[in-house]
Image (cartoon, rainbow, N blue to C red):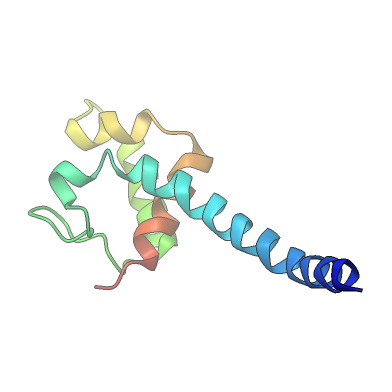
Length: 100
């Protein structure tokens, strides 16, 4: 009886554990990629340069895509060119979730 009760509890909690892993699995790559931005933009996205925290994800993506097209490239342009579109989205989503 006790073994059955423990099994039912574990089974009932499995979806919650899977959801928690999914959430952290999505946030971790964005934060890791964004760590390259921390030196200038700060760990909270509001350092000495343009504030990124709280900007919309689409706004950050648009700016980084525009930077890729700059010629000749400047410092941020070089950074923007080193990321794939998927990586830029992860970075943008990370900073968009931070409070202003």
